[in-house]
Image (cartoon, rainbow, N blue to C red):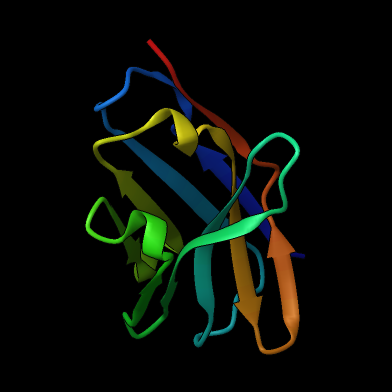
Amino acid sequence: QVQLVESGGGLVQPGGSLRLSCAASGSIFSFNVMGWYRQAPGKQRELVATITSDGRTNYADSVKGLSTISRDTAKNTVYLQMNSLKPEDTAVYYCNLKVGSRVWWGQGTQVTVSS
């Protein structure tokens, strides 16, 4: 059984920064993809960024240059450093783990960007 536990969300002013963390536990195979998705009210869930277990990254165009995804493979933890946050970044951010065709999701963490 795989569990994903996110942390680091909260309220931040426009232009501020946040760092999200997601710790995975359970039976995790050596090759996998971890990532972050977000869902704003009334919108579909969308990709933010992903990182493979060998360090390859992929970003949504909307966050390129503003966010950085990284991981500590030994700790099975993925991070998302978000800078220069805007009100439109407000959403519930979900951690995601893919191993082959199997997918797991975290419970989500709220990020609110507002003055």
